[in-house]
Image (cartoon, rainbow, N blue to C red; front, side, top):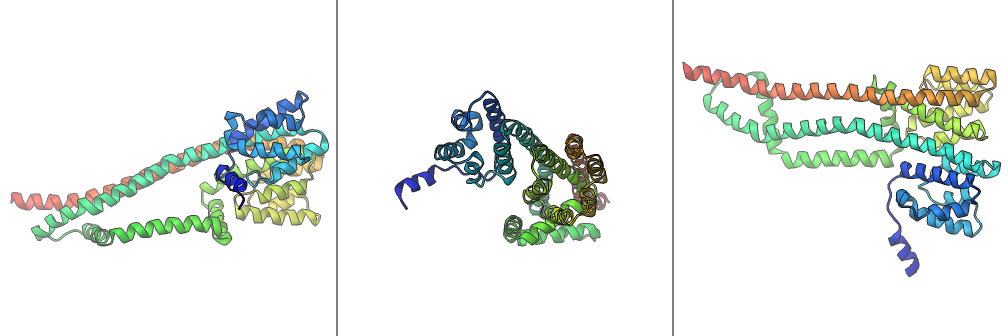
Length: 361
């Protein structure tokens, strides 16, 4: 390996995913510069070292070099896997149609919304995850350190213990005998789950199927997905991209494999001549309201405008769905935590009261 290539490899930043907030800021500033009459390569030169989009600096510098070599903007961006196919296709459409600034402005809104949704979902999951982890730690602490103390007390009293207490004592003894094995097993399961999600298509598809089909949670999750699909379709269709091509790009960019398969089935049906609304309806995933609005757009010849209306509606619905998920998670986890702790307290308290009563007599 040449030293220059080795140095470039060392200098290359490591990012696990695209920072959509930085991308949104870049696209908005890029659009403003283009509208002021600046050429794409000049605009990239101005923006490539901006601190507020620091996660993109490395890639924008290479894009600028490629533009100077004669590459089109979309081609220069397509050389980096961090940028998704939707962005590349929309840039290509903007170059061909002469509406690059307007399309970049729409893309900025799209990725800004994506970033907001992602942060809201993470925020909604943070508290439940903390509660779950806390509950697990408390239970392990009780079974490993608290229960053994009471076990020796109960054994010395020679009392007949309630069934619930015996069960918890058995669990405590099992955890103490196999503590290290349990920790290794849990870490192994978490590792296998992460690897399965990333490497096994069938495993990820199964998890994605469960996400959609779960009661209450699945319904709200579908609203979030529908908001993303409708916004992407609205932007691409109003920008002049063929509907089927737009749907293919959105399908491939979907993080949910089960939804992706259903969208691919819908694409094949549309190609065979079936109405878009009917093809969507056949997926049995997307909400009926979404399918009905698409049908109205087809019949009136105003599909682009209808998609814009639908995307705005599902923007609000996805925000409400995230709040609903949080309202579902919190009480359920708190109740489960209370049941676990309460069961342990009762299993210890009952024999303790018996011991105290026998001692008084």
